[in-house]
Image: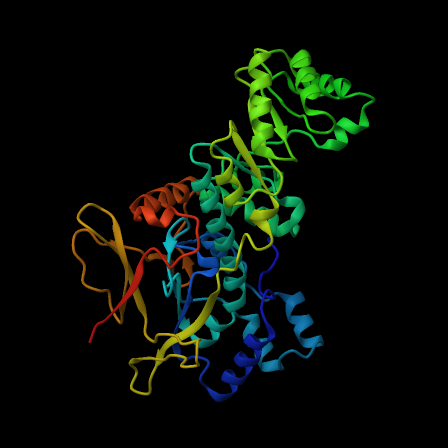
Length: 433
Protein backbone atom coordinates (compact mmCIF):
# COMPACT_ATOMS: atom_id res chain seq x y z
CA UNK A 1 0.00 0.00 0.00
CA UNK A 2 1.38 3.40 -1.02
CA UNK A 3 1.69 5.98 1.77
CA UNK A 4 -0.01 9.33 1.14
CA UNK A 5 2.16 12.16 -0.10
CA UNK A 6 3.32 14.72 2.46
CA UNK A 7 4.19 17.33 -0.17
CA UNK A 8 1.16 19.56 0.43
CA UNK A 9 1.83 19.75 4.16
CA UNK A 10 3.45 22.98 3.03
CA UNK A 11 2.69 26.67 3.44
CA UNK A 12 2.06 28.48 0.19
CA UNK A 13 4.84 30.99 0.75
CA UNK A 14 7.40 28.20 0.36
CA UNK A 15 6.21 27.63 -3.20
CA UNK A 16 6.04 31.38 -3.79
CA UNK A 17 9.74 31.61 -2.90
CA UNK A 18 10.46 28.55 -5.02
CA UNK A 19 8.86 30.07 -8.12
CA UNK A 20 10.71 33.36 -7.68
CA UNK A 21 14.10 31.73 -7.18
CA UNK A 22 13.60 29.42 -10.14
CA UNK A 23 13.03 32.53 -12.26
CA UNK A 24 15.98 34.55 -10.93
CA UNK A 25 18.47 31.66 -10.91
CA UNK A 26 19.11 31.49 -7.15
CA UNK A 27 17.07 28.32 -6.55
CA UNK A 28 20.10 26.09 -7.01
CA UNK A 29 22.44 27.92 -4.66
CA UNK A 30 23.90 25.55 -2.08
CA UNK A 31 22.26 26.43 1.25
CA UNK A 32 22.09 25.40 4.90
CA UNK A 33 18.87 25.65 6.88
CA UNK A 34 18.71 25.21 10.64
CA UNK A 35 15.75 24.30 12.86
CA UNK A 36 16.14 25.64 16.39
CA UNK A 37 14.34 27.36 19.25
CA UNK A 38 15.35 30.80 20.47
CA UNK A 39 14.17 29.99 23.99
CA UNK A 40 12.52 27.25 26.03
CA UNK A 41 8.80 27.84 26.32
CA UNK A 42 6.82 27.81 29.53
CA UNK A 43 9.78 28.33 31.85
CA UNK A 44 11.02 24.82 31.08
CA UNK A 45 14.55 23.94 32.18
CA UNK A 46 15.19 21.63 29.24
CA UNK A 47 13.46 20.40 26.09
CA UNK A 48 13.14 16.86 24.74
CA UNK A 49 13.55 16.17 21.04
CA UNK A 50 10.85 13.95 19.55
CA UNK A 51 9.53 13.56 16.04
CA UNK A 52 12.82 12.98 14.21
CA UNK A 53 11.73 9.53 13.09
CA UNK A 54 8.39 10.89 11.92
CA UNK A 55 10.09 13.78 10.11
CA UNK A 56 12.31 11.33 8.23
CA UNK A 57 9.25 9.26 7.33
CA UNK A 58 7.59 12.41 6.01
CA UNK A 59 10.67 13.29 3.95
CA UNK A 60 10.56 9.89 2.26
CA UNK A 61 6.97 10.56 1.20
CA UNK A 62 7.57 14.18 0.13
CA UNK A 63 6.67 13.73 -3.55
CA UNK A 64 4.44 15.75 -5.85
CA UNK A 65 2.34 13.18 -7.67
CA UNK A 66 -0.26 13.74 -10.40
CA UNK A 67 -3.02 14.61 -7.93
CA UNK A 68 -0.92 17.17 -6.04
CA UNK A 69 0.35 18.73 -9.25
CA UNK A 70 -3.14 18.92 -10.74
CA UNK A 71 -4.47 20.70 -7.68
CA UNK A 72 -1.60 23.20 -7.69
CA UNK A 73 -2.31 23.95 -11.34
CA UNK A 74 -6.09 24.23 -10.91
CA UNK A 75 -5.69 26.52 -7.88
CA UNK A 76 -3.07 28.59 -9.72
CA UNK A 77 -0.69 28.34 -6.79
CA UNK A 78 2.44 28.37 -9.00
CA UNK A 79 3.23 28.61 -12.69
CA UNK A 80 3.78 25.80 -15.18
CA UNK A 81 7.57 25.90 -14.92
CA UNK A 82 7.43 25.50 -11.15
CA UNK A 83 4.96 22.61 -11.45
CA UNK A 84 7.34 20.92 -13.89
CA UNK A 85 10.17 21.32 -11.37
CA UNK A 86 8.02 19.92 -8.54
CA UNK A 87 7.10 16.89 -10.64
CA UNK A 88 10.73 15.80 -10.49
CA UNK A 89 11.31 16.84 -6.86
CA UNK A 90 13.55 14.56 -4.86
CA UNK A 91 15.57 15.74 -1.89
CA UNK A 92 19.22 15.03 -2.69
CA UNK A 93 20.91 16.79 0.21
CA UNK A 94 22.06 15.94 3.72
CA UNK A 95 20.34 16.19 7.09
CA UNK A 96 21.94 16.14 10.52
CA UNK A 97 20.12 16.49 13.81
CA UNK A 98 19.59 15.72 17.46
CA UNK A 99 18.05 12.22 17.53
CA UNK A 100 14.79 11.37 19.27
CA UNK A 101 15.23 11.38 23.03
CA UNK A 102 18.07 13.92 23.07
CA UNK A 103 17.73 17.09 25.14
CA UNK A 104 17.82 20.54 23.58
CA UNK A 105 18.32 24.07 24.90
CA UNK A 106 18.01 27.60 23.45
CA UNK A 107 19.75 27.85 20.06
CA UNK A 108 20.45 24.09 19.88
CA UNK A 109 20.68 23.16 16.17
CA UNK A 110 18.04 20.45 16.44
CA UNK A 111 17.98 19.90 12.67
CA UNK A 112 20.45 20.97 9.96
CA UNK A 113 19.29 20.63 6.35
CA UNK A 114 21.84 21.05 3.55
CA UNK A 115 21.14 21.15 -0.18
CA UNK A 116 19.99 23.61 -2.79
CA UNK A 117 17.78 26.46 -1.61
CA UNK A 118 14.88 25.10 -3.62
CA UNK A 119 14.95 21.56 -2.27
CA UNK A 120 15.42 22.70 1.34
CA UNK A 121 12.97 25.61 1.53
CA UNK A 122 9.91 23.51 0.67
CA UNK A 123 10.52 21.27 3.72
CA UNK A 124 10.09 24.06 6.27
CA UNK A 125 6.48 23.53 7.30
CA UNK A 126 6.41 19.75 7.37
CA UNK A 127 9.53 19.62 9.55
CA UNK A 128 8.33 22.38 11.87
CA UNK A 129 4.83 20.99 12.30
CA UNK A 130 6.14 17.56 13.28
CA UNK A 131 8.99 18.64 15.55
CA UNK A 132 7.15 21.51 17.24
CA UNK A 133 4.27 19.22 18.17
CA UNK A 134 6.17 16.08 19.11
CA UNK A 135 8.91 17.81 21.08
CA UNK A 136 6.36 19.83 23.05
CA UNK A 137 4.53 16.64 24.01
CA UNK A 138 7.75 14.82 24.91
CA UNK A 139 8.97 17.72 27.06
CA UNK A 140 5.72 17.87 29.02
CA UNK A 141 5.65 14.08 29.32
CA UNK A 142 9.21 13.99 30.64
CA UNK A 143 8.30 16.40 33.41
CA UNK A 144 5.35 14.20 34.30
CA UNK A 145 7.61 11.16 34.47
CA UNK A 146 9.95 13.09 36.78
CA UNK A 147 7.02 13.99 39.04
CA UNK A 148 5.73 10.41 39.01
CA UNK A 149 9.01 8.90 40.17
CA UNK A 150 8.84 5.10 39.98
CA UNK A 151 5.08 5.06 39.35
CA UNK A 152 4.04 4.40 35.73
CA UNK A 153 2.17 6.89 33.56
CA UNK A 154 -0.30 5.88 30.86
CA UNK A 155 -1.01 8.16 27.88
CA UNK A 156 -4.77 8.45 27.30
CA UNK A 157 -5.32 11.76 25.51
CA UNK A 158 -6.70 10.51 22.18
CA UNK A 159 -10.20 11.89 22.75
CA UNK A 160 -8.87 15.38 23.41
CA UNK A 161 -6.98 16.04 20.18
CA UNK A 162 -6.90 15.45 16.42
CA UNK A 163 -6.85 11.76 15.51
CA UNK A 164 -3.46 11.98 13.81
CA UNK A 165 -2.01 14.07 16.62
CA UNK A 166 -3.22 11.44 19.09
CA UNK A 167 -0.99 8.79 17.52
CA UNK A 168 1.98 11.17 17.38
CA UNK A 169 1.41 12.20 21.00
CA UNK A 170 1.45 8.58 22.12
CA UNK A 171 4.79 8.09 20.35
CA UNK A 172 6.29 11.17 21.99
CA UNK A 173 5.00 10.24 25.43
CA UNK A 174 6.48 6.76 25.09
CA UNK A 175 9.88 8.21 24.18
CA UNK A 176 9.62 10.35 27.33
CA UNK A 177 9.06 7.28 29.51
CA UNK A 178 5.32 6.62 29.57
CA UNK A 179 4.59 2.93 30.06
CA UNK A 180 1.66 2.52 27.69
CA UNK A 181 -1.04 4.24 25.64
CA UNK A 182 -4.78 3.79 25.28
CA UNK A 183 -4.51 4.42 21.51
CA UNK A 184 -4.64 1.23 19.46
CA UNK A 185 -3.34 2.84 16.26
CA UNK A 186 -0.24 3.98 18.15
CA UNK A 187 0.18 0.44 19.38
CA UNK A 188 -0.12 -0.95 15.88
CA UNK A 189 2.09 1.67 14.23
CA UNK A 190 4.88 1.97 16.80
CA UNK A 191 4.65 -1.16 18.93
CA UNK A 192 3.75 0.80 22.07
CA UNK A 193 2.05 -1.30 24.80
CA UNK A 194 -1.68 -0.58 25.00
CA UNK A 195 -4.01 -0.69 27.96
CA UNK A 196 -7.56 0.24 28.89
CA UNK A 197 -10.40 -0.64 31.23
CA UNK A 198 -13.90 0.86 31.05
CA UNK A 199 -15.77 4.16 31.20
CA UNK A 200 -18.65 5.33 33.35
CA UNK A 201 -21.01 4.50 30.49
CA UNK A 202 -20.26 0.80 30.98
CA UNK A 203 -21.41 0.97 34.59
CA UNK A 204 -24.44 3.08 33.71
CA UNK A 205 -25.48 0.60 31.04
CA UNK A 206 -26.09 -2.08 33.67
CA UNK A 207 -28.92 -2.10 36.16
CA UNK A 208 -26.49 -2.22 39.09
CA UNK A 209 -22.80 -1.56 39.67
CA UNK A 210 -22.40 -5.15 40.78
CA UNK A 211 -23.71 -6.42 37.42
CA UNK A 212 -21.25 -4.17 35.62
CA UNK A 213 -18.33 -5.41 37.69
CA UNK A 214 -19.38 -9.04 37.26
CA UNK A 215 -19.56 -8.56 33.50
CA UNK A 216 -16.09 -7.02 33.32
CA UNK A 217 -14.52 -9.66 35.55
CA UNK A 218 -16.13 -12.48 33.54
CA UNK A 219 -14.76 -10.99 30.33
CA UNK A 220 -11.30 -9.91 31.49
CA UNK A 221 -10.57 -11.86 34.66
CA UNK A 222 -10.05 -10.70 38.25
CA UNK A 223 -6.81 -8.94 37.30
CA UNK A 224 -8.77 -6.21 35.52
CA UNK A 225 -9.07 -2.63 36.78
CA UNK A 226 -12.55 -1.49 37.83
CA UNK A 227 -13.78 2.11 37.71
CA UNK A 228 -15.19 2.76 41.20
CA UNK A 229 -16.38 6.38 41.30
CA UNK A 230 -19.58 6.26 39.27
CA UNK A 231 -21.79 6.28 42.38
CA UNK A 232 -20.57 5.76 45.94
CA UNK A 233 -16.87 4.89 46.19
CA UNK A 234 -16.82 2.94 49.49
CA UNK A 235 -19.77 0.84 48.34
CA UNK A 236 -18.08 0.30 44.94
CA UNK A 237 -14.89 -0.91 46.64
CA UNK A 238 -16.81 -3.43 48.72
CA UNK A 239 -18.65 -4.64 45.64
CA UNK A 240 -15.48 -4.87 43.59
CA UNK A 241 -13.72 -7.05 46.14
CA UNK A 242 -16.84 -9.20 46.59
CA UNK A 243 -16.95 -9.79 42.83
CA UNK A 244 -13.25 -10.21 42.01
CA UNK A 245 -11.90 -11.38 45.36
CA UNK A 246 -8.81 -10.11 47.11
CA UNK A 247 -6.88 -10.71 43.88
CA UNK A 248 -8.59 -7.77 42.18
CA UNK A 249 -6.02 -6.22 39.86
CA UNK A 250 -6.84 -2.55 40.28
CA UNK A 251 -9.30 0.25 40.77
CA UNK A 252 -9.45 3.59 38.99
CA UNK A 253 -10.39 6.96 40.46
CA UNK A 254 -11.42 9.64 37.98
CA UNK A 255 -12.81 12.50 40.05
CA UNK A 256 -12.80 14.27 43.41
CA UNK A 257 -10.00 15.03 45.85
CA UNK A 258 -7.65 12.35 44.61
CA UNK A 259 -5.20 12.57 47.53
CA UNK A 260 -7.78 11.96 50.25
CA UNK A 261 -9.73 9.50 48.13
CA UNK A 262 -6.63 7.44 47.39
CA UNK A 263 -5.82 7.21 51.10
CA UNK A 264 -9.37 6.17 51.97
CA UNK A 265 -9.51 3.62 49.17
CA UNK A 266 -6.13 2.17 50.08
CA UNK A 267 -7.23 1.76 53.67
CA UNK A 268 -10.49 0.10 52.69
CA UNK A 269 -8.81 -2.26 50.22
CA UNK A 270 -6.29 -3.32 52.84
CA UNK A 271 -9.05 -3.94 55.38
CA UNK A 272 -10.81 -6.17 52.85
CA UNK A 273 -7.61 -8.15 52.25
CA UNK A 274 -6.98 -6.74 48.75
CA UNK A 275 -3.52 -5.52 49.69
CA UNK A 276 -2.14 -6.08 46.21
CA UNK A 277 -4.87 -4.19 44.36
CA UNK A 278 -3.42 -1.21 42.50
CA UNK A 279 -4.89 2.30 42.55
CA UNK A 280 -4.74 4.27 39.31
CA UNK A 281 -5.84 7.91 39.23
CA UNK A 282 -6.89 9.97 36.23
CA UNK A 283 -8.77 13.30 35.83
CA UNK A 284 -6.87 16.05 33.96
CA UNK A 285 -3.51 15.35 35.61
CA UNK A 286 -0.46 17.47 34.80
CA UNK A 287 3.04 17.33 36.30
CA UNK A 288 2.04 19.55 39.22
CA UNK A 289 -1.02 17.45 40.08
CA UNK A 290 1.11 14.32 39.84
CA UNK A 291 3.71 15.86 42.15
CA UNK A 292 0.96 16.70 44.65
CA UNK A 293 0.04 13.01 44.72
CA UNK A 294 3.56 11.88 45.57
CA UNK A 295 2.71 11.09 49.18
CA UNK A 296 -0.62 9.46 48.35
CA UNK A 297 -0.90 5.65 48.07
CA UNK A 298 -1.22 5.73 44.29
CA UNK A 299 0.25 3.10 41.96
CA UNK A 300 -0.06 4.80 38.58
CA UNK A 301 -1.38 7.77 36.63
CA UNK A 302 -3.53 8.09 33.52
CA UNK A 303 -2.73 11.32 31.71
CA UNK A 304 -4.79 12.82 28.89
CA UNK A 305 -5.93 16.39 28.42
CA UNK A 306 -2.98 18.14 30.05
CA UNK A 307 -0.54 16.17 27.90
CA UNK A 308 -2.06 16.66 24.47
CA UNK A 309 -3.72 20.09 24.72
CA UNK A 310 -3.76 23.40 26.58
CA UNK A 311 -1.31 25.31 28.72
CA UNK A 312 0.31 22.13 29.99
CA UNK A 313 2.10 21.80 26.65
CA UNK A 314 3.50 25.15 25.50
CA UNK A 315 4.88 25.11 21.97
CA UNK A 316 8.50 24.22 21.39
CA UNK A 317 8.86 27.47 19.44
CA UNK A 318 11.12 25.99 16.77
CA UNK A 319 11.88 28.05 13.68
CA UNK A 320 13.53 27.08 10.38
CA UNK A 321 16.04 29.61 9.08
CA UNK A 322 18.60 29.93 6.33
CA UNK A 323 21.98 30.24 8.08
CA UNK A 324 24.44 29.84 5.20
CA UNK A 325 24.50 29.88 1.41
CA UNK A 326 27.13 29.76 -1.29
CA UNK A 327 28.67 33.07 -2.32
CA UNK A 328 29.85 34.29 -5.71
CA UNK A 329 33.29 32.88 -4.91
CA UNK A 330 31.91 29.39 -4.36
CA UNK A 331 32.52 29.50 -0.61
CA UNK A 332 29.75 29.14 1.97
CA UNK A 333 28.69 32.51 3.37
CA UNK A 334 27.03 32.80 6.82
CA UNK A 335 23.72 34.69 6.77
CA UNK A 336 21.52 35.73 9.68
CA UNK A 337 18.33 37.56 10.52
CA UNK A 338 18.85 40.71 12.61
CA UNK A 339 15.24 41.66 13.48
CA UNK A 340 14.68 42.75 17.08
CA UNK A 341 13.86 39.78 19.35
CA UNK A 342 14.10 37.40 16.39
CA UNK A 343 17.80 37.29 15.66
CA UNK A 344 19.53 34.20 14.37
CA UNK A 345 23.19 33.20 14.27
CA UNK A 346 24.67 32.61 10.83
CA UNK A 347 26.84 29.70 9.82
CA UNK A 348 26.61 25.93 9.77
CA UNK A 349 26.52 24.65 13.37
CA UNK A 350 28.12 21.78 15.26
CA UNK A 351 27.06 20.91 18.79
CA UNK A 352 28.28 19.04 21.82
CA UNK A 353 27.30 18.71 25.46
CA UNK A 354 30.08 19.83 27.77
CA UNK A 355 30.41 17.70 30.89
CA UNK A 356 32.41 17.93 34.08
CA UNK A 357 34.88 15.26 35.10
CA UNK A 358 32.08 13.66 37.12
CA UNK A 359 29.85 13.39 34.04
CA UNK A 360 27.50 16.27 34.88
CA UNK A 361 26.43 18.41 31.93
CA UNK A 362 27.60 22.01 32.27
CA UNK A 363 26.86 23.70 28.92
CA UNK A 364 25.60 23.37 25.35
CA UNK A 365 28.60 24.24 23.17
CA UNK A 366 27.95 25.20 19.55
CA UNK A 367 30.69 25.60 16.99
CA UNK A 368 30.17 27.81 13.94
CA UNK A 369 31.79 26.67 10.73
CA UNK A 370 33.36 23.58 12.25
CA UNK A 371 33.14 21.46 15.36
CA UNK A 372 34.33 23.11 18.58
CA UNK A 373 37.38 21.75 20.33
CA UNK A 374 36.48 19.05 22.81
CA UNK A 375 37.94 17.27 25.76
CA UNK A 376 37.32 13.65 26.71
CA UNK A 377 34.16 14.46 28.69
CA UNK A 378 32.35 16.33 25.89
CA UNK A 379 29.59 14.46 24.04
CA UNK A 380 28.74 15.19 20.37
CA UNK A 381 25.01 15.74 19.81
CA UNK A 382 24.40 15.80 16.06
CA UNK A 383 23.98 12.52 14.19
CA UNK A 384 23.75 11.98 10.45
CA UNK A 385 20.14 11.39 9.41
CA UNK A 386 20.16 11.68 5.61
CA UNK A 387 23.10 11.46 3.20
CA UNK A 388 22.74 12.44 -0.48
CA UNK A 389 18.97 12.20 -0.13
CA UNK A 390 19.02 8.68 1.38
CA UNK A 391 17.92 8.02 4.93
CA UNK A 392 20.77 6.59 6.99
CA UNK A 393 19.26 6.83 10.49
CA UNK A 394 16.73 4.44 11.96
CA UNK A 395 16.29 3.35 15.55
CA UNK A 396 13.70 1.81 17.83
CA UNK A 397 11.65 3.78 20.34
CA UNK A 398 13.35 1.82 23.09
CA UNK A 399 16.70 3.22 21.92
CA UNK A 400 15.22 6.73 22.04
CA UNK A 401 13.86 6.08 25.55
CA UNK A 402 17.29 4.93 26.68
CA UNK A 403 18.95 8.01 25.19
CA UNK A 404 16.61 10.29 27.13
CA UNK A 405 17.23 8.47 30.42
CA UNK A 406 20.98 8.86 29.92
CA UNK A 407 20.71 12.53 28.90
CA UNK A 408 18.55 13.39 31.92
CA UNK A 409 20.97 11.59 34.23
CA UNK A 410 23.71 13.99 33.05
CA UNK A 411 21.81 17.13 34.05
CA UNK A 412 22.40 18.94 37.34
CA UNK A 413 19.75 18.17 39.96
CA UNK A 414 18.15 21.61 39.63
CA UNK A 415 16.99 20.68 36.12
CA UNK A 416 14.43 18.28 37.58
CA UNK A 417 12.56 20.96 39.51
CA UNK A 418 9.12 21.75 38.08
CA UNK A 419 9.03 25.47 38.89
CA UNK A 420 9.56 28.02 36.12
CA UNK A 421 13.20 28.96 35.70
CA UNK A 422 16.01 29.64 33.27
CA UNK A 423 17.38 26.75 31.19
CA UNK A 424 19.45 24.25 33.13
CA UNK A 425 22.41 24.72 30.76
CA UNK A 426 23.89 27.83 29.16
CA UNK A 427 24.52 27.89 25.42
CA UNK A 428 28.06 28.83 24.42
CA UNK A 429 29.13 29.71 20.88
CA UNK A 430 32.62 28.93 19.72
CA UNK A 431 33.27 30.58 16.35
CA UNK A 432 36.18 28.98 14.56
CA UNK A 433 38.16 31.30 12.26
